[in-house]
Length: 192
Image (tube, rainbow, N blue to C red):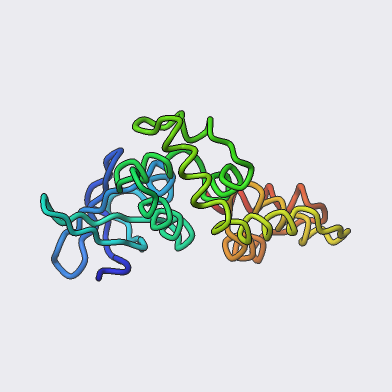
């Protein structure tokens, strides 16, 4: 299996990217969320990946984070949700937002995705709610933690904006400021 692809971005399209690695161009289908994280053509990138072999072809799917790939794998495990529909779901928000929607039983969010009706949306929630309960619980603990430390508050703010904890820590390592707002502002400027 191809677990990740690192190389130069040669093509960026709304539904896929091509990454050249060792003289071979790999076409990876991506969600809109992953596409936001892919740099401009000519730059180097690393995408997590998942290979799907079917009778009609072999397809490679790319993800900006391990969490997004894990949610993709959970989604394609639900009856009636194939890889294309799973990518459409992932395009509807950050992994954290989608996990919260599953935990909260927000079927309307999934019904808004093309190819998903009420039954499939309900099936996604019923089959995945217990599997993601621990992950959404972690998010809620982070938000509820009380502290006066500006760096900790800034980190929580960045996580709330959709950054992973590791990304938030990396951005804050370079940021200067005395208040959480100043630190978040510096971190967001550095992320561009």
